[in-house]
Length: 114
Image: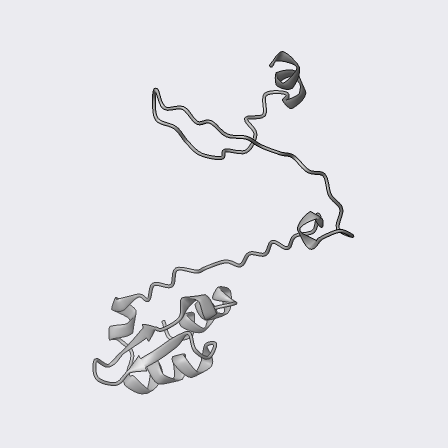
């Protein structure tokens, strides 16, 4: 319909499903205008949030030069729940990178042991 094409100004609209070549879809749609007073589904409010997910990689060469007590101190100085000292292997492991909220602070602490 030319009138509909002019009203969307090149917008492709909302994809309902994707079809392969030579496939067709038959459907019947009913558009209903509502308000938030009638039902929450009509309320135009939504919440979108984000946070950075850091990729934490430890420098193994530097870690080999640290003593066990220095590695334990590094873990305690950083945010709780992010790092853990593995007693069995004698190294620091990342247990929850999503818990890291200040990677710049971790880098600063790491430079103290360089």
